[in-house]
Each structure stands twice: as structure tokens, then as C-alpha cells.
Length: 346
Image 1 (cartoon, helix red, strand yellow):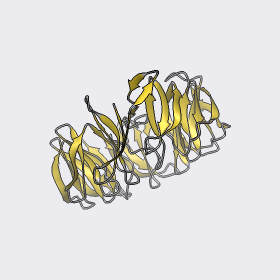
Image 2: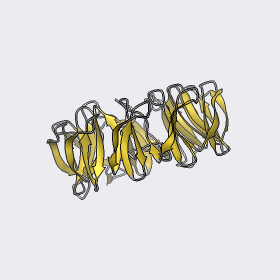
Image 3: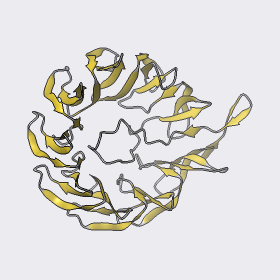
Image 4: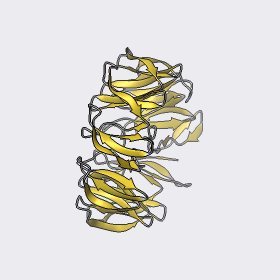
């Protein structure tokens, strides 16, 4: 186990890995709140040192020295950075730290399917990995590309474009989600349904919330209860939960009376509700919270790593990013046995 304390100008200063879930703009009622995994498998991880941002690898070796006023995680090999802080201007760097697209945008999104949303003068367009403006800024808002289409807004109505900027589904929806498994959740008024890539309704608007399809099912709610529908709109699991997440590795987290457990695709409890919070299964394990401490369980509900962390993310490539706060606090990676593989003291 490697343990380091960084010294800057004679002052001990712990480098704190950013443990926020890097949530993107919330998809207004189209998806349930979920902690996210590291955005890119094998990615460098963001650090903050003396109010400047850089990147380390999974051995905690500094790869890109802290030098940016603001930065976000890598996606598709590029990371968005700003020399001036959150207000920009924003550009992109490679994993060697080379500025590949000069900071010039008022805001910038992650790369997805080779394109990234950027903002200039309150209008949104898309650039490719060389910085070429492939779709000129013209939209009032814009989302990431998913399955070849991206949601965009003209005025207060949402539609979808392809990668040339051609409008494929005319702006007509009050809210819209990303395409997943060939369908996207959309709202007209306050009711949600699903359309295909031609804009045809496959499931008519009828739900109060609707999430993306995952493993053939989507979480939807009517009133205050959540259930699951298939791609035809048929209820596979009737609304009965206070919360229902996406299926991952054959199981979905659900909540009853503020306690989380896990069900299978028939709605049968595999792990009874008992946790204060629960994450999705990833690599056979899920992060759960009990009494404000996080640990990890397997698919039988057995603790593999007992609750002991103040923050924790899902496993990726056999490692998970965790944090213990306090005077003896530390942040870094653990393996699937709970052993620290590298950490920084705080």
C-alpha cells in the first residue's frame, strides 16, 4: 500500500480526490437519481491541490500536474478543463495533459459518440475531437449523443438531431431523455411516454416519471409508486415501490419505507429492504449505506466489505474509490477484499 503526503512550498497539503458523482444536468424526471461510476474505465482521476486541478492514475501517481482552475473527468480520452474556473472559458486536454482544443467555450460537455456539446453566447452546438464545430451553436439547450441522436431544445420544446445537425424528430416535447435500447422517454405536459427514433409513440404518455430502458425494462411511476414496464408498455412489475432504480447485472435497487433492497426481473426480492441507501451492482458488488457508513455486498446480500467509509463509488476494473473523513482520514482505492491499493492522507 502506497501512502503519501504532498508538500507544497514546505506546507503539508493532502491531495483530495474529488468524490462527487460528476452528475450531469439532471434529466427532469426522466431518470431516477443514481450515484454514477467513474465516467471512463481506466480513466485518470481528478485531484484538487491548493484550489488547482490535475489528474492521477489508479496508483495515485500524478500524471497531469494540478494547473487548471476547473476540470472534469475524462470521457472518450479527453477531459474538459478551464484555466479560469467554473465560468470558463473551457477547452479539452488529452491524457498527457496536452491542450487539444483551446479554451474558448462558455460551457462544455463530455464527449459522447465522438462529439461534445459546447456553448457560445447562450447557444449550443457540437465540436468533434479536433475542435471543429460540426454543428453550429443554434440551440437553446442540447444533450449528449446516445445511439446516434441527441436531444435539443428550440425555445421550450425538445426534439432530436443526428450527427450532421439534421432535425430527425421535430421539437414538440416538454421534456426529453436520451435514447436507450432504441427508445427515449418524453413528456407532453406532465405525462411521460416513449418514442422510437422516428418520433413515433411506442408507449403513450401516461406516467408521472419514466427512466431509461436498461436490460429490457424501464422504471416508471404512477402517483407515488414505482414499477417496471417492458418495451411495449406492459407492466412486468406493478407499481408498488417508493423508489425503483435501473436494472444492472440482473438486479435493481428498490425502496420501501425508506429502506433499500434488490429485486430480480420478476419483482422477487433477492435482498430484502434493509439499507439506508443502495447503489447499482457493478462487477458483482454493490455499494450500500447503513447508519451513514458505506460498504459493499454481493448478490446474496452478504457483506464483502463492511460499512466503514464516508463516501464510496462502484467498482470498476476491480477497484473502488472510497473516502474516510476526519483527522486520520484518507481517500483512495480499495480492491474487492477491502484492501487499500493506494491512498492519500487528507
